[in-house]
Amino acid sequence: MATGSPGHITCWALGAVVLLQHREGGVGMGQCLRHQMHWEDLEEYQALTFLTRNEILCIHDTFLKLCPPGKHYKEATLTTNQVSSLPALRVNPFRDRICKVFSHNDVFSFEDVLGMASVFSEQACPSLKIEYAFRIYDFNENGFIDDEDLQKVVLRLLNSDDVSEDLLTDVTNHVLSESDLDNDNMLSFSEFEHAMAKSPDFMNSFRIHFWGF
Image (tube, rainbow, N blue to C red; front, side, top):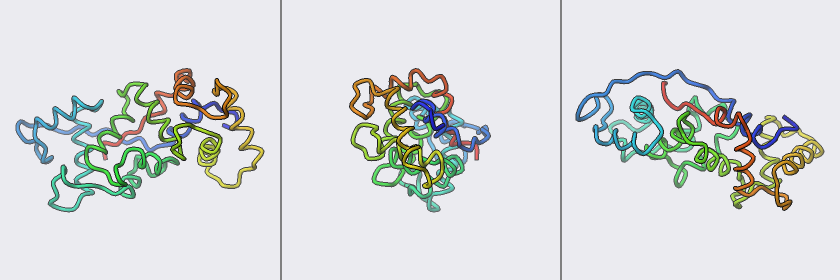
């Protein structure tokens, strides 16, 4: 990994996740049984995401289990700690960044959770995945992935703070030499997008299953 490209960095970062077995869920007419969700809402969520009806209902079940009792799902929110502790995220070295990018004011509505699950689903389009991958790796949120961001990525992937400065420098320099097309020592979104488009494993690695538990 010390000599990996940004594409390989992304694959490693989001490959170490717990994949949860998909569970089928029934759907009725009018209001979905057990789900407090109207049929029209379910159809709208399906139209606006890359998720199936069963996936949406399974995510909804999990959301309700974490919400205060009696709270309607459209009014309830989850904390970032609750979401980052989900089995799908708790082993991911970038769980805090994922939560930061997909939450609003450090809380998750049901639609925020759906949006996150949709981006990480198998059906999501490459351009959407690349957009969110860039935001996740942009730690300092300056609109670029610079050497500071790259070093943080490497430290998290190695799961250690005891990494030599020489190794960090070598890795970041190698990544930049491969992907920094204008030689300004940082990756713009277009440069990152170009690098990800050349990575054959990116789409398979940028996946997390948030349903089925």
